[in-house]
Structure formats: C-alpha cells, structure tokens
Image (cartoon, rainbow, N blue to C red; front, side, top):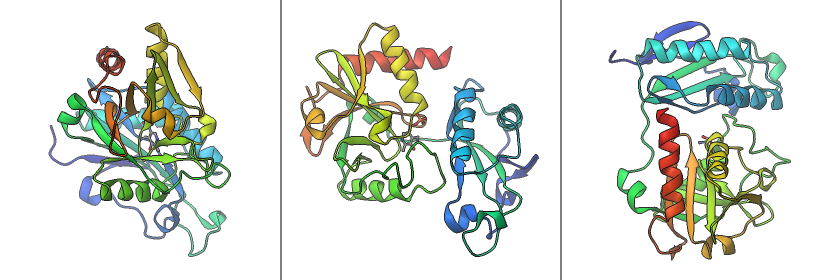
Length: 287
Ligand code: PMP
C-alpha cells in the first residue's frame, strides 16, 4: 500500500502534496462546483452508477458541463481506487467550475477540474453505533429549495457547516435541520429516519433534502424485508414520539439516534428495526 494517496486531476495522478488547483478556480472563490462521496467496500465503489448519475445531475442543475462522459468518470474513479490499492475507504469526486476572473460570471471560467480523491474516513466513534447518538435541532434552517436546492450536492456546504457548528456547540456530533416550513428536513450530512408502530418514515424529497443514496438503499432494503416505508412531511413532534430513529449517509452508513434535543427517543437504546436494517445494509455492502 502506498503511503501517499494519489489524487486524480484531469487525467493525471499526483501525490497528495502536489494535488493542487488554481486560487482563481471559482470552486475556491465561490464554492462553485459539485462533488460526491462514495464508500469503497472490498475494493469496489458502492452504488457507483447512482453516485455518478447524481454528480451529473448536480452539475446539470448548476449549468456546469463536466468534460467527461459518465462512463469516463466511472473509469477515472475506478482507476483512482485501483492506483491507491484501496480495499475499504472513501472516494471523493469533485468537479470545479475552473479558473476564472474575480467576478461571478461563470462564462469567464475555463478548464473545469475533475478531481478524484481516495482516502480513509471515520465519521463517528464506534460506541455511538452500538449505543446510539444524540442529535440537536438547530436554528439554521436547510436551504430553501428555491434558493439553492438541497438536491444539488454543491461545493457550497456553508448551510450544513453552520448547522454542524451549532450542533457541536450543543454537544452533539450531528444537527437536525428544519426546512422553511418548520418540518424536519435532514441532518448536516445525513438523512433521518423514524420508526413508529413498525412503520418506517422519512422526510420526502420535497421536504428539501439531498436524495441520499444510502437513504434510497435503506428504503429498498426495508421494503424488501416487508416493512412499510412512508416518505412524507414530518415534524419534531414525530421525532419526540418515535419508537426509533436512525441516520443514513455514505460516510455514516446507518447510525442509531437515541436522543434528540436532550429527550430520550423510544427506549433510549438502538431499536430492533434500526439494528435489523444495519445488519441488512452490511450484508448488502459485503456482497
Ligand atoms: N444529506 C446531506 C446534506 C449530505 O451531505 C449527505 C451525504 N453526506 C446525505 C444527506 C446522505 O447522502 P448519501 O447517502 O448519498 O451519502
């Protein structure tokens, strides 16, 4: 295994310290670009086609043309995983608007940078997966979909970072964000699920969320296991009266939540359906 990660930029590989972009890139100046986060299990990128499709949809939505086809992007990602000999890890494809002038006009940008980073990731301490984590509702609301649609996985993550800061200040590693209607939307980097009376519920896409690929995987797993899954508008009331709560995300995978806003959820321990879905998820990724 090589010590220094090799980073793909526009068809070439660079050692981590040499992997650089222009300070005039609008990704740096304005957060103008898109990205993905993909897990690598047993040397294979999990749900790669879905992640690349979402990357292209994010780019399309911000009127950014990725200078590669989806097939070539998949190859670049697979090549970067291979050159890094990565068996279990994390992959971060990024597409920037490219270097431009000082000023917003994206037409002045040339040379978008297609970057693929492959490295390790640890989200939360292992004991939280066993015993459940605590989250806090924060006052920073999720971006209004008509301002910056949360479905776009853009390089502008300040909305999420501000929420994360508030959560940390409240002593929680993840923050629950509400939408402009006061409904629960999602956490700063994870989607949220509730279980009530054996039914699994999660905010719908039009609650203003990122359509998580782990979320969709878990919905499919749950339905295959015979559960009813509802996608709908939910409020903090639903969180407080839930039997179980868990979060999903590429980096977080599936993590149980046992407290929200200092209130105990359900029994205060990871619930049986959360645990069943976690097991089913790990079985799937090992396949
Ligand atoms: N919501 C947000 C805001 C995210 O950034 C992410 C990804 N980290 C998720 C949800 C989960 O999405 P996915 O399962 O596709 O990683």
